[in-house]
Image 1 (cartoon, rainbow, N blue to C red):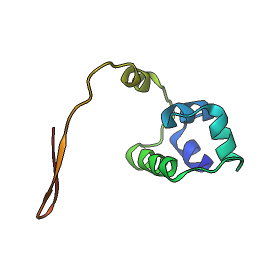
Image 2 (image 1 turned 60 degrees about the vertical axis):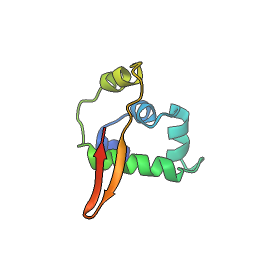
Image 3 (image 1 turned 180 degrees about the vertical axis):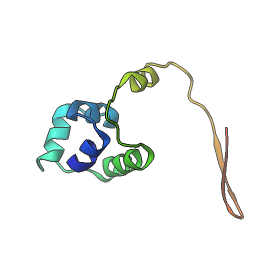
Image 4 (image 1 turned 135 degrees about the vertical axis):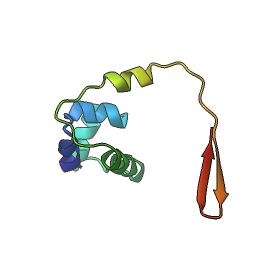
Length: 88
């Protein structure tokens, strides 16, 4: 996990903010004092798969998203012959 965090170019505090946990939790994960659960593992893998490594990083965009007070969007997922179709 530490390797992937560094690959993304994030500090421990930035990684904690992106994962939605306290920085002490990240430290406990990285030092094997607390298990890294399957949901956190999937989230980290998704972040790594969808985001290129960064040299300069900022939580401005994440903060903007977290502070929005928009109603949640409704969407529908349907099974099709050749995969899935999503509509909002």
